[in-house]
Amino acid sequence: MEIETGGRSGPRGGHARLGQLCRRLADASGSLALGERGLRLVESVTCELRAGRAPEELDDTFDELEEELLAAGHSAGLGSYRTTPTPPTPGYPQLPVAGPVHPPLRVLACPRGHCGRVEAPDDDAPHPGCRIFDQPLRTVPLR
Image 1: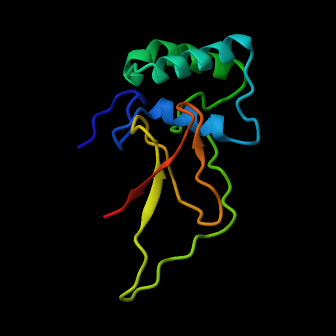
Image 2: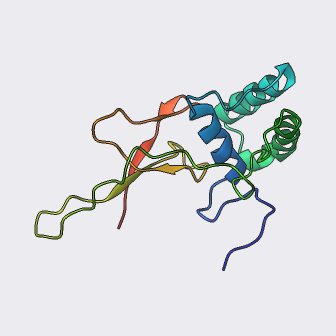
C-alpha cells in the first residue's frame, strides 16, 4: 500500500521532487531556465544536501523552487505527476536473450539513494551524473 504524500515522496521511497530536480539539472536541453532567485534556491538545495541534510528537511525550499519554476512557465514545476514530458529515447533497448548466459539486468540510480531517479544504462556511454551530489549514478542490479 502506498501512502499519499502530496508528491514529496515517491513510490520507490525516494524524494520525488529531488528526483525531478536531478532530472532537470541533467537535461542537456537547458529546460531549467530560471531567474536569479530560482538559481539561488537550486544552489541552496544542492549545498544543504551535500552537507548531509535530508531532502525532507528542505520541503519549504522545494516549495519555493516549485513556485519559481511555475512562475517561469514550467507547467510541471517539480512534479512528474503533472505534465513533465518524458525525455525522448534514441530507440528501444535490446531485450536480454533467454539462455544460460544471459546478462544480469541493472539500472542506474541515485548515488546516495535519496531520490527515485532511475535510468537504463548505456554500455556505449559513460554513466550519467547526479548534478546534486556531483557523482555518477550508481549501478543497481535487478533481482
